[in-house]
Length: 123
Image (cartoon, rainbow, N blue to C red; front, side):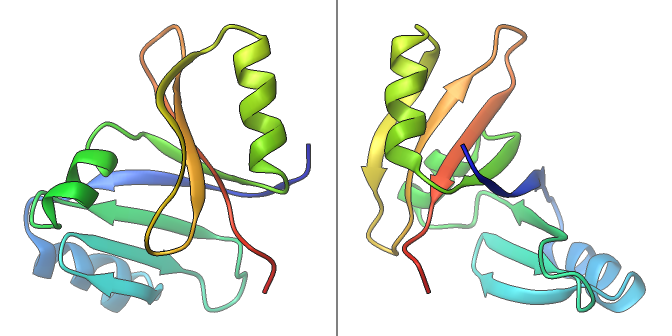
């Protein structure tokens, strides 16, 4: 399965201080900056990214992001979902096309880590 990128998902308590650290201090750019959701990208290497979220997001988005530890962008999310089911993995959020575009599902590893497996339509 082609892997496009993997991004850690961090939680924040203080949105302004968190944004200042990642953007002003380290030099990331805000690719998405919405209430409760900040997606940061390196200005030099576009696949160097991270997601920062907090409970101020819309209830729907916050519920989905709250338990995710890492997000992995794959080339064929439907094939990944079928493989996860065939392997008997613990799918904790079924494959869904979100209103804002991505198609994804969540799977929990035996140690408790939750992975958002996501696919995006070609640009």
